[in-house]
Picture 1: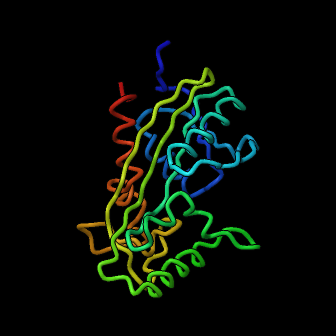
Picture 2: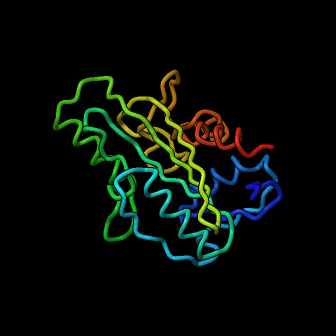
Length: 203
């Protein structure tokens, strides 16, 4: 079987609007039609793995089986050296509150933990992204990207989503939260994963 997605309908296996917008922008050159798991009212599968690729595979295959469409999932998060790589795959969990996800709460928790540890500066870390594209027949492809940088405080910028306002990528003076999505999409961990994706599928 030839696995090609040009001109096809692709399911973005996410309920996260910010992530959906970034994926849609990055996929634009392939002339694909994108629908999201939220659009189709698909349930969010339980993410039971302790790696980005494991959880990305769960989401992609669940969506492909439920929809019958090639499904692209993204599992991503931030790893902070002084916290032993945390929050890592639990990045979104740190934002959970009784009223839903609040990343200001998550970023504040991150800063407080770094202060408690008296972590030295610069407080290095990285954003990680793993993409999995799964077909209804069970085949999948995996693409990974990372962006190194440092954790800053206070929060800066109101662009992007998640932990973007406290992450300053190496070589830049702005945080992801201070960059418009076009600038961020050129250099982010997700952009690096998509570079590998395009090497495979832009044919």
